[in-house]
Image (cartoon, rainbow, N blue to C red):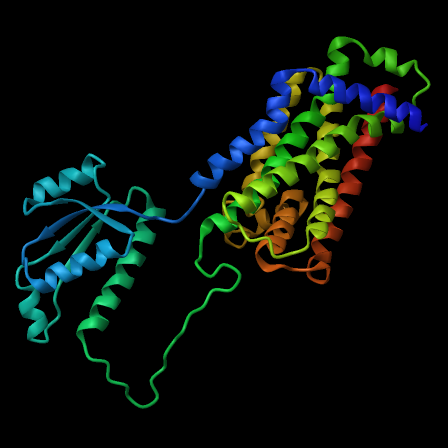
Length: 368
């Protein structure tokens, strides 16, 4: 039995690694995608290009403008008193915000009156606009605190916010572990979905059917190489995230590998099922992407599951990527242990067992 499995395994490794382009896809592409996504997939908004319209031009107005530039979130790209020129900068995408300070700003402050300053933001990107407005509100509060003497009335509440696990609220720390999960899913799905289809296209499936090898042995020999490749990708991308992007790995690496094992059981089962229902590698590839993108969107990788409609939230329980994202982010950022993550691992194991069993039964019918 093991000799037959090893023969299929060796054949599969050779067929996969024989093609130089496939070696690039397996090893080079995950590293390249991690580097690209690690820099591109972020919600942090910095260096917002801003036009300054300072009609007061006093120490107070200049101090407010300096508060914006010193924060690191805003860069003044132009200073003008021409409203049309300022508006044209946003229209031409040369700037994303306009800070307008009216004449009499310092005089109003000195008289104890509210001093008006307006921030106009390009709202075509609503996500960035919300972040920019929040940054501006924080800067304005800091400016006010520096001007007005602090009087502490009896019973005053002082809120001291603190973020656990990601103190600087870096979105990269949240997204890079998710990139590891999505890349492992994509690579394992692609390779497994084309495994049996390739045998059909070259005409060797009939030869395999007349050999003494049993279907279970054939499936183990086919899936084992892709599981190994999946582990290699986990190690490579994890090292890249920790050493290059400085993502903290606070948990147990063994627990991460346990979660990856249960996750690979699901993805390999799904890929095997796609391979049995497809007639060509092109069909297998298209079906893989048809499954992958909805799975990524419904996993919590980009959008919080709690914000989705209730019906869609129930559908996410059938998505293995949902559970693995919780595991990998908890291991990286929280240092969570098995006592916390056992429900996610149990759900992945149950889902993977069902999916793999269904794929194997479908494979039996295909051979019949």
